[in-house]
Length: 254
Image (cartoon, rainbow, N blue to C red):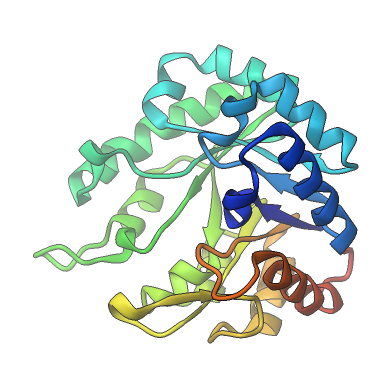
């Protein structure tokens, strides 16, 4: 199934009427679901936002939350996610206080405990990576490796394909390592390296999507969520090209 991270269209979401029109166009392209970013759903109110998404004929896939807020009220977050119709809560970032190798150990254990509590509520907790988790510290260790070495099976991953590639790592290998724990991926393509990395439409960058999709299928990925942080042209044209590239590769899309 192919979804869209609405951060890609953040400039077309200022009002409820604009949100509704944007979602209509997303559905018209062929997308089946959408994912809000942290601030978006709360801007309109969670229930109202979810209602507008449903009215557009789309599924609301996730509820993004800051970890500190989630850990402080797991039951409330679960209630909100169920009310919105989502299946997963996503941690969009490692909190600043845990952004070190030693901090990643603590974060992994605490996030795993929250994931265990959410599993009882029928929800999954997925961690979304960026590129910085792959940077090596003075001892040569990386936060991303340490996090998964210390996380329980309850914690899942939302692997951002583009950022793994931009970090110089192999998303196919990580999909194999975390097989069975990756319900969603961010279908992001990139071009360039270092500070000159550009996000581009799927199929227009350096990622080998046939290999990635094959690995995703083996790993049990359910949703390919297109995300393009910055678009050089019309974002709607970009997401249409991404959909057109992905659709023929998937057995069960849209």
